[in-house]
Image (cartoon, rainbow, N blue to C red; front, side):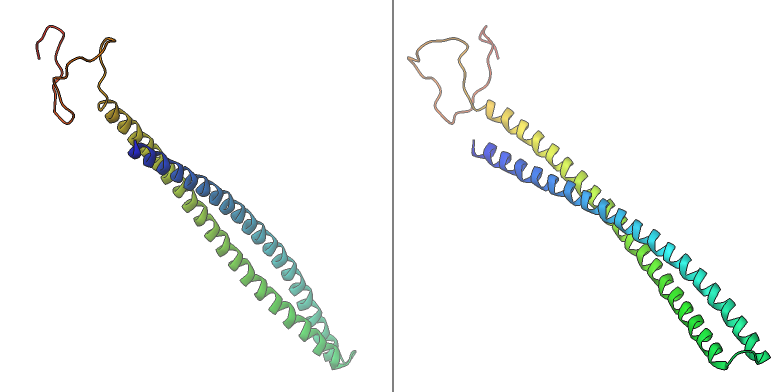
Length: 173
C-alpha cells in the first residue's frame, strides 16, 4: 500500500513538472514572437537609416559642388559631412541591432524546441509511471487471498508466508 502511495505521489510530481514544462513552452513561444517583432522593427529602422544616409550623401555632394563654385561657405560642407558620417554610424548601429535581434530570435526558437522536448519527456515519464502503478496494483491483487464462497474459517492449512500453487476444483494442479 505504501508503494502505491509513493507511486501516486511520484505521478503527481511528474504531472506538476509536465505543467511547468508546458508553461515554459508558452513563455519560450512568446519570447520568440517578441524577438521576431524586434527583428522586424530593427529592419524597418535600418531601411529608414539607409534612406537618411542616401539623403545625407546627396546633400554632401551638393555641398561639395557649391563650395567648389564658391557659392556657399565651407561651413555648409562641414555640416553636410557631419550629417553624412552620423547617418553612416546610425546605419552601422542598426545593422548590428538587426544581427543581435536575429540572434536573440534564434536563441528563443531553440529554447522553444527545448521546452517542447521537456514537455514530451514529462508526458512520457507520466505515462510510464501510470503503467508502473497499474503493474503494482496487479501485483498487490495477488497478495490478497479470496475465497470462492462465503463462510467461516474453521481450519487453516496454510500459514502466512507459505508459497502456494493454484489448484483446480477437481483437485488437480
